[in-house]
Image (cartoon, rainbow, N blue to C red):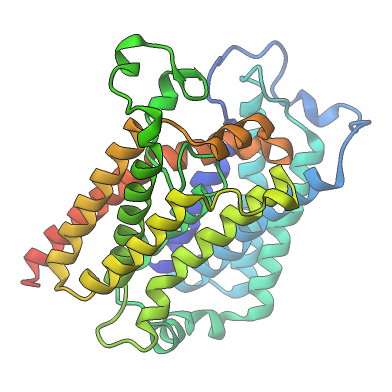
Length: 361
């Protein structure tokens, strides 16, 4: 799949999932599904809600117009018009589907903001022009240190970064399955599950080990996306860890205040970061196949530790203040992403090993 198409599909999946979350309680509509189009404009709305709906559909208009122009060789104006209509049609379909969910309310304001966002993205693509859009792949190959066919892995790393916004039991603790059987943070509802958890005094050591293994795995996966001999490889490998740390700090600042902006950086996290960087320096430049096997093993061990260790105090504080807030619509998306990420990453590494074996790499 072309790069533009892959990003478009990923964005569409995220928008659909967030729009229809929590995906439960489906029911027959009590009224005509299109009746919200004739209702009065809502009396209460916020500028932030409008902005989020606008921004959510802007990439759809931009990416779809670019994809239509490149892959179907359509005139740029026609591609922009079709992408605008498609974005509005998607929004209309999802707003109608919300009538089947008790927790969601279809809104003409949301539909308008979505449609305008899609149109704005299409206009951006139109202003860029067909020739520049057609040169995107050549520009990427010339200016980015990425290997061919690295788009799925890059999407996977972006998903890991986005997942860091969600409160996790331990730092970088994706793949948390215990929370699925937990109503109160840190207190599993099933006694058999409690018996498997490590004692609280082992939490700092488990966190340090899990963080170091995650740093190693993410670094190895990033290295696998780079061209052989690419300039700035060391900085590229370190970039996801730096960005993830910045996201953790921003989330802490937003929910716990300026004083606790670095509350996530406890002793376990500090030790894990240092150990993970040391492991990357030691193992980061092994061959391609050992690198992928090592990444898979590190992810599996880290996920096991994150599920066996009790949550830290930072997580409990975040959960106390976490109500979704302005991000309520994306709460389910972030949770699903954080839960599924390591398992998808392991599968991706296995797929890379299989395709590499076919090519004799």
